[in-house]
Every structure is written in structure tokens, then in C-alpha cells.
Image (cartoon, rainbow, N blue to C red; front, side):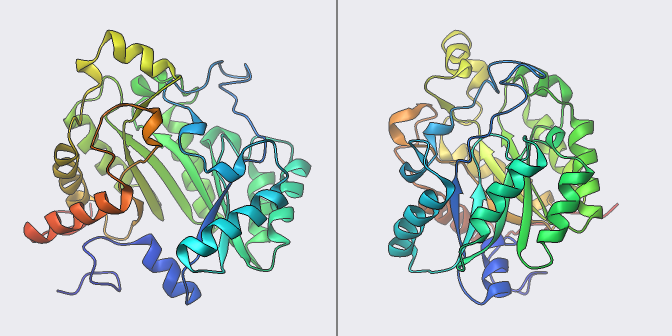
Length: 315
């Protein structure tokens, strides 16, 4: 069967898109540039999102307040052996990576781009931390480098965003996505399934909402409750309300239905989250690694003879 994308995979793979674009695998190097978030420093809130513990998923080479150049050197050494590649994107990942004055952003981004084998930037941030000045600067960088912004949307519902202490509403996410797209910068979004108070119907409705936005790619994560977060404390009090996906099979079944309704033009970056095993409180999926999870998903999609966008209707 021929899909709207150029591979035989049953979803529109962002990895495959990048490999075709650059003619080789390009690996992301996670970086910690020392930024924070406006819901941490008191600007819109304190304490950060209730699920957030960056140490649970950050690679070891970003720790210790290292300079960006040192993180890149160590990250290249780590990934070159593991993935047999010499091409990279600098992924500014920790906290909100446009939340700083423009001159500080320029210094960080351009330090990363000074490496010949760093082909571009992937910048993770919040939708309330961009403006025309920052986006126009990224447009200039994009003339010579690959630039992509990932917005932490998390949920399309304001009630949920308030519960998780996000500090912005969905309208601000919608506006940031549209403005970024209008400037020609590829937009990625991050969505978490299973957040407090959301029903399965709510989660399916999010797919329809996202379909109407100019999104280039998406990361889907299941809610993971990790140690040393406010969510861990809530889970101790309300375990049943935070147990949307107790098994990986339950998540795979849900995800397939979501993918069937997703716009086939939206590329998939990730289908699940992964944190270090010693940090997870719930769910326990038997230390299932991401590659194994992806393999299970694709086999089940093949068994059901389904694919991304099978039930999508452009309206």
C-alpha cells in the first residue's frame, strides 16, 4: 500500500523525513543552556509544571553546568558510537529555551551552530515565550541552517493547563503555532495523554483540534509520574484518577485510534515518553524501552491493517 508519505511505515515518520532531506541520519543532541520557565521564576507562577523533572530524561552529558560547547563535544562522542552518525541537531531541550533576552539566545544558538557537523537547531519552549523579535532572528538563522521550534502544548484544554500549573492557556499556544508557521519556521508540538481530569473522549477531541492547526510534527507522550514532582504527591492521594494507561497495551490501543484520526501530513517525532527506570513511579511497563514500544505499535497497526490518517476527514 502506498501512503501519502514516502515510506512503507504506517505513520508519517519525522525521522524518515529528516533522513531523506539530509541524505543521512541526523541525531539530536540534548542541551541544557541554563534557562528556566516563567512558571518557575514567579513571572506567571512558581514550582513549574506538576509533572516536570528534567533530570528524569536528560542524558548524563548535560549535567554539571557545562558550557554548551562541552555538552556538544561529549554528546557527539556519545551518539556517534551509538548511532554511527556524524551529523547532528543541537536540541535546546531543558526548560524554556526562548525564555531569555535576545542577546543571550543569540550567544547560545550561535555557539551550537559553530560546530561544522551541527546542521541546525531544535528549540523546545513554551508558546508564551516567543515574540516577533525572537522569531525573526530564527528566520535569519533558517536561511543557512535547519531550524525547528517545539512548543510544549501538553493539552488543548484550559482546565487541564490550570491543573498542571502550566501558566498559559490554549489560545496562546494556538497563536504561537500560527505565527511561527506564518514566518516559515517548522512547528513541532508536544502533547501528553492521560493528564489529570481528562477523559478518553477529551483526548480524542484533542486530535481533532490539533488537525486544524498548521503543525509540522508532533510528539505524543503518555503521562509518566516520576519521582520528586508534585504529580507524585497527587498520585499518592488520587491513584485511580491518574491511571489512564496502566499497561502498554492500553496505551497502544488508544494511540492507534488517535493516529487513525490524525492528519496524515503531520509527521510523528515520538509516540511515547521514556524516562530512566529508577525515576518512574507509574506506569510500570516492565522497563520497556522506546524502540521496543515503537515496534509493538507498528506490529499492532499492521495486524489491524491501519495507518495514520485512515479515518481522517479534512473539514
